[in-house]
Length: 210
Image (cartoon, rainbow, N blue to C red; front, side):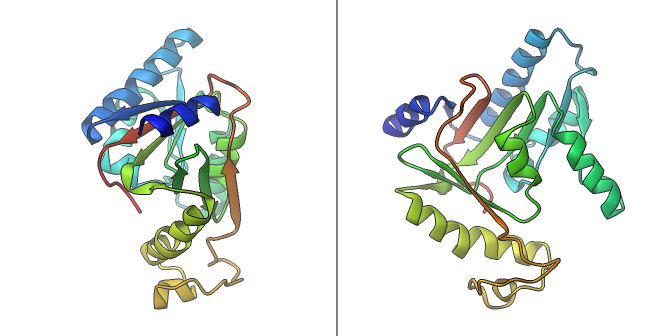
């Protein structure tokens, strides 16, 4: 863990190692509060949004944010058109919350997305990005990261979302190209944050999410 934290520091990603999901929630709120103070905004003026993440829910972070801040839930609208507009607005948030599919011991974050709104926010847009991840997603290298995501995360997410993909049916990646179904559309490796104060990573000493 010390090696991983040092590699993340080299990548200009500020990382915190916490013992459990309760501590992760407290740390996330602490980071948001610090951002709010720097912005000079009230709790209800600070715009906070997020990408799809079981980890955030398992830690109770989204519920905590809804109670305290101006929360934009891009998944709340009922129509696809309204959801897409909310996802675009989320790119202008003060704070964006998300998980990550894998972390390499060398410090890279690896993610695969379908729509790409989560990765769009990670790369550019929101002023601060807070990533919460369980220790089960730490892998040795990029090859193992891709393997983990394809064999575990994508399969379980496709099943959870009831997607009509080979992996949802067989449990194995079929390298599919299906409109409206394929969730492996974008692969992003983050090896460095150009803004040293932008990406915050909370690593939890528990298995969380897929």
